[in-house]
Image (tube, rainbow, N blue to C red; front, side, top):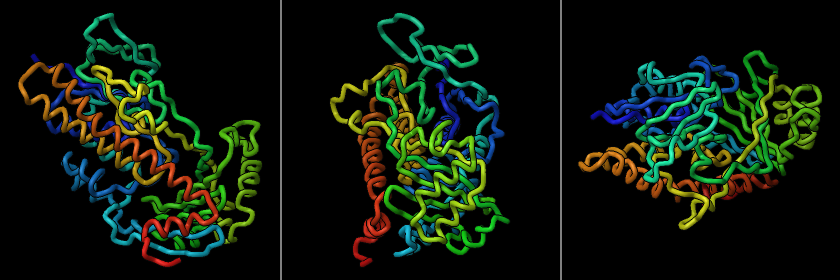
Length: 400
C-alpha cells in the first residue's frame, strides 16, 4: 500500500528544498503555500541571500540543482564593506568566499521550477492545526489542517511546518512565540537613476555593506537587477512605524524625518543613503525565539507524533547570515533521517517517528546556537564600536 503524502506547510526556500529532496526520492508530498501564485512582487520578497557551501549549497547539491544554482549565483558579490558610522575603519573583505549571492525570489523560483506544478497548492494560508479525532495512538493522520479559506485537509504521513516566523504549526510543538528584539529594519531601495546610485556603486559594488553606530545600523546590498536594498536598522519600540507612531509608515515625510534623526551624527556619505532611499519603505521587526526552549529536558518543546518544524518555524533568530542556510540544511537533515529510517523494513509510522526524533536531536542544539549567535551579532552591531568588533571577530590577528 502506497504511503499517504507528506504535507509541507510553507513554500519558501526551506519548504521547497524539502519538497525537491522528496521529489528526487519519489516520495509523495504536497506543499500548501499562502501566496496566491508564484508571481510574487519582487519589491517585498526578501533581499539577496548568501548561500554557504556546507549548508545551503550542500542541500542544493543533494537536490541535483547545482547547475541551475550556478547560472544565477553571483560569485562576484561575496564582498562586504564594514565601517563605523563616521566612515572610519572602512574595510572590504570576503572576496572569493564560497558564499555566492542569489536573490531570494530567484532561489524560490529555481526550486519551484524543479517541482511538478500540481505539487503546490497556492492560496492556502494555514489558520490552525487541530486534532482530527481522539485516537490515543497519535500519528500524522490524526491531525487536521484548517485553512483560512475554510477548507480542511487530513490523513497525512507527516506534517512539516516550514511556515516561517509566524508559524501556525509551531504551537502544536511549543508554546513559545517570537519575541521582539527591540530592533527593526526599515527597508528602502536605491535604483539606477537615483542620485545616490553612483555612490552606492563606488562604496559597495556588487556586494554588501554594513555601517554601525550606537543603536543604529545601515546595511546596503546589491540585487541581481543592480538596484540596491537599503536596510535602516534601529533600536526602537515595535510601535515606531505603526499608525500614530513616531515614524508612521503611512506618512512618508514624517517617517523619513523621524528615521533621519537617528542618523543625524553619521558621516554625510552614509546619511545620504537614508535621505535618498526610495519609497515604499517596509518595516521589518526583528523577532526571535527563546533559545532555552532547546535545552535538554526543556518542557517548552515536546515531541509530537507526526509533526515537526523546519527553518524559522523551528528556530527563528534575528539576521546573522545563517537563516536560509540553516533552514535548507534542516530540510536535508530531515530528509536523510526519513530515508535512513524507512529503509529498515518495519512499520512506516514507527520509521517516521524515529526520523522525527533523529532530526530534532540534531536540529535543536544547532537551532539554539543559531539564536545565541544572532543575539551576539545584535549586541555587536548596535554599538559605537560595532565595526571594530566585527572586524576583530572576522580577523582576530589584525590590528584596527
